[in-house]
Length: 90
Image 1 (tube, rainbow, N blue to C red):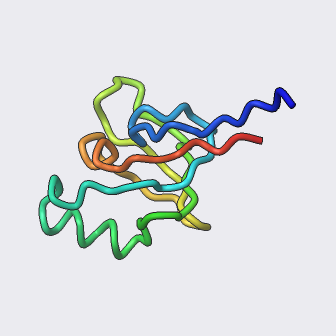
Image 2: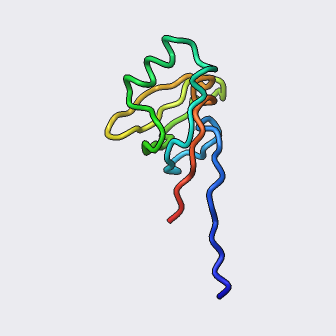
């Protein structure tokens, strides 16, 4: 058989294309401040959780909107850069 299995390589949530669904692979908790880490935990960010980028600020350095579960949340780019996600393939 010549079946090719592709394993998605985790990327930063910050660089995930808009509309692409993914699962959280890893979060750099050490790189976040205590309030930022607490906020992510309260919002439900953890390994294995589904996430999707909905919007980005037009200037490229502002916040971005993501869907996690049934919630839409705004994240700073630096916080999104601490979250590694595995894109889902259909």
